[in-house]
Length: 153
Image 1 (cartoon, rainbow, N blue to C red):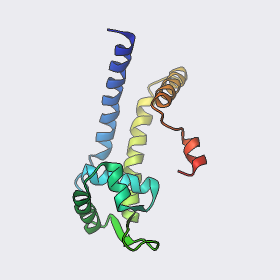
Image 2: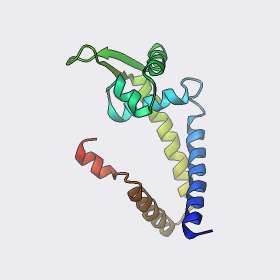
Image 3: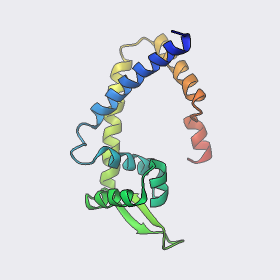
Image 4: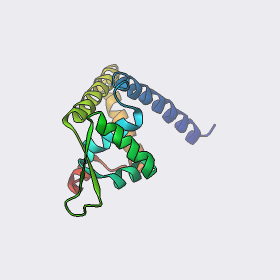
């Protein structure tokens, strides 16, 4: 096995660990929304109101399927649809306060779980993790939070 293969295996193990954290953080909300619906709520929480077509594109969803998903979210009180002031043909989707609270609660549960895992490491190991994750994110072309803030994203 090459060094690259070993690194890939380590990252796969890490991704399984993180997926476990994500799954545990969602268990309490999956009786309220489905995973695809929660993904929409996450995007809306991050980006604010979005055109329905843009949301569907981000998720790689077919427009008719996505329209039904948004209709279910709307009937559940998680989103509100409205027409754009600039173009009445465009439909904007906005999350409700209840949706934003749901996303915040899941995010906080996830943050606590990650903090509990990190508490098992010493400061030097924290620094090693930070450097390794920064390297990986850079190689994946993932911008830093500071870059996103500068761009207004």
